[in-house]
Length: 215
Image 1: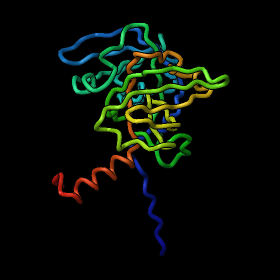
Image 2: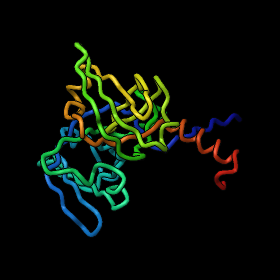
Image 3: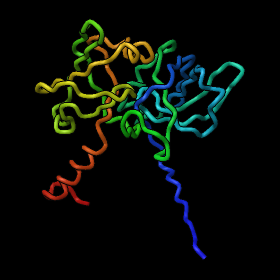
Image 4: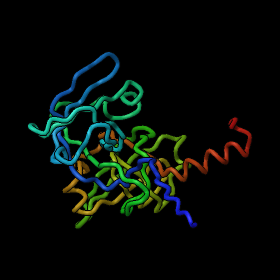
């Protein structure tokens, strides 16, 4: 008798393709954590314990209120210290994406929802049909970015259009500008960044080979 074994991949990931924009309705401080209530048209399709990317940060749905189209998430101190979530205010808009599995079609690139840090916008340009943005990278992350490679900014999968020293530039089409919070990026704005996971694995491997880190 032949047996067929079905293996289900349960590691949730994202693609950097924003599904909707949510609005922060309330923020409650609880110890070192913050609890956010967010309104979104996605609420009727959500469930408790679901993973949602919020400006690139993977957070778990804890409560749902379909009557008000709101749900609740909690960001712990570590998340607040490494991302822009600690700067969020009531009324702010956030990019939202539900998690996918590797059984589904991936339209962006593999995004973990584990933000590596914050980068600042230094320039915004109108390119007569598209918009260009430049961000300054921390010195110790320059090796994680390559020209025409992938990078995630506030949960948006983008292609690196150019690199110059510590400055990374991306171009955004009108559709993405209209359907994400990229429209709110201006010089001085801080955004969440997640570097390509494959680059991070390669860097980790290089460090081990060179004896710079223990396994």
